[in-house]
Image (cartoon, rainbow, N blue to C red; front, side, top):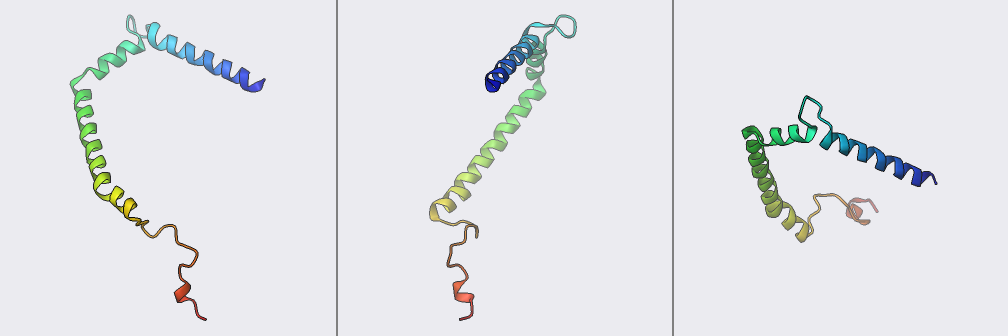
Amino acid sequence: MYRAARWILSSLVTLVVLYVYFFIPLTGTRTLWDHTRRILGTQEAHELGVDLRTAGDRVATKIRREVIPAVVSGFDGGVGATADSGAALRPR
């Protein structure tokens, strides 16, 4: 019962927020959606998108070159020691 009531309340709040975002003008004649579109349409936003794409491509390339081969070869960077690790160093 509590879970259903919480879901209904969350859904109603989400619908109200979406309604305000798309349909209620906050500053005269523009809604938040209009402001978002105008901001994302600027040259600075376009440059940011290009820079983010470049950085993402560099990260993906580094992962493909370094991380994936290390994982495939079984190298764990010293993490995940086995049960018999250090057995040779223990005095008998």
